[in-house]
Length: 446
Image (tube, rainbow, N blue to C red):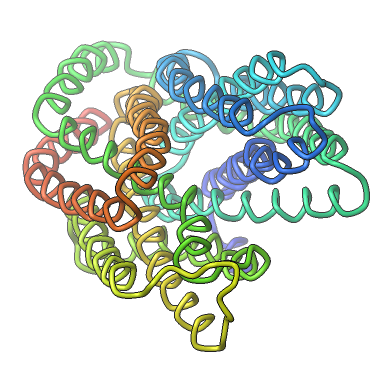
């Protein structure tokens, strides 16, 4: 591997280092945004908050994160990614530290809302950086790895918080996570600064032909509008279904397993540790399908949605035919095996949704980097994704209370099938326009 790296040009080496720094930044931010779910039980037990307020704290984060994605996506094309990424990490780290020293319920909501805005400052500028200061081959090779930061960062968060809760308390867990984010913010600022010449080199190449650049700017604005009208609408609708499923499954899988299959929180927790690990493979599976079969991004999404539809349908059958377990039920090996099998099916659905997410939030926006709109498009799509996730978390809870888990999974199946249909319906239009976009920029650069 080192021999291969040493054989690359200086530009390629710097481009890969940029990808590594972006990877570290986004994996790190997940340490400071997933810890509320781990610490919330202890916060409630200590009496500093309750279930209703705890849920509201999480909702504040989600809503502000969605709004922040839209705003920071637009800003990400206008400010240097280094400044936005490092500022976001530092602010999120400070908010985590404030969570650890606070005891007021209202302030918990305010602090975690600010943390949501801070965390939203990373992804869109990262996509802009990768699309602008790397090659097409490097950006596509790195895309799946960047999406893998989500499950990897989640695992790291769980491990750090587990250690903090075991040896100290929830306050120390928040402060440990916050400290890591603050330190990484400073470290990555200097790491990105070391690539200043690399980034300037790319910019200078564009400035050598001002007339062409002016023409490109005008055409890129028109092209962006044409692409949005022609195909990006389908991606925007697809990301709504994707956000509903990806985050809905992530939130409710442990509850489903506990309510229907195995009423033991310790066993459920153990079984659920496989979920983020298997999710890592979803991003790479989508990338492999995309490259091996030489299909476009939305067609790949349709395949991922179809896989999710089938796996969710099988789970729904089990939910219907297997009687719910209670605390008095004697749990045998067969029950654990069934719960594990159902978890694998749910993991397959969850992983396929991360794969679709990789196409929608990484591969598609890369086309727009060539006309200076990668961050804007990423932020817009990410905003839709998390808005859908916020609505989904509330809706699923209501449906399960009133109609049961079977009804919830029927809704999930419908969402997955609709996502597949929408993505397949729009794939030709989006591919035609992104091909035009790519061809225009390549022609301009010659």
